[in-house]
Image (cartoon, rainbow, N blue to C red):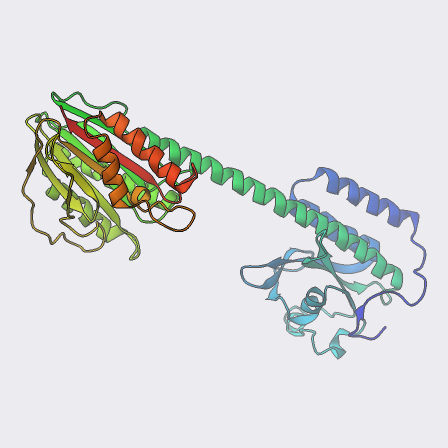
Length: 426
């Protein structure tokens, strides 16, 4: 066999394998079946390689996909080594996915002499075998160095391939276990986040004379970027809040929860919607990444129907001033939170809700819900639903609007978080 050619199959029969060889392999196989500690298992495989092949050193290189490197997960009698995945003799065995026998490393241009120069070690011969998964894809390389008193034989090549196959199974099993554990941990974290988010929703609607209110939300994933809240202010008014953080998943959940917490924390001190959103914006502008933002609506409604409000980029805000009035859309008075360090809009005048009047705030997951041909549910259909249910309590309005959007998309699983808040003066 030449110094640099990859091994495919021996041209002659492999020499006999002794009973000691068989015992070592069986012991290693038994350990493979019961050991879940990858480091201990790979070290045992490396030690078995030294004993089986009667070599001075053995190393197990694992492929690091993030850096495209091979590194010594186990290296007997040497420190950790990292090399590019295609570099050197170990890289050649990995890239070709074949056993590589180098009988004279110093005559091979792929051999890195620097390690020997630093340590004083002399590498006489090398046997490298790729460790592959069940699909035949290499996961790393097992390498044996310096056969005692002679060159590696064909029987050694068969033995190292056997060891490499065992190590590949161990690596694949470990990676599958790690993936499963990570997935389970992520599911657990997401469930905890969902529980925290659910706990932030109002447990009951405050009983304010002359006011009915109801809210509903459905996240597009385990956690959502939408949030709503109702509470009774110290002056007896109903606090109304709805926010929608950009994106989906855990990060928007944390952001929108922060906004809700900031608003509620300062609401008792300064129950002015614009001032409260300005405080939240100041914090978010310092914390959020450039591409993230939050749209938010905040209002206080008194029993006499006076609605003091502010909208930071959130819409539509649908208002029916009285039971016999048409639905008007209130424009957003400020830019979304987190976009600018300060809110630059002008304060808006309060509006008056007469008997039978209502306020409806929805997130874009409702009016942007798409059917099978890519057509949005749209503001017009939302308004039509409100007209149909203009004299109904908030609970019925929400149920109808929710069911209409679900029927429109043809799926119970929304593409975006959906939230509806309905407040009615009775």
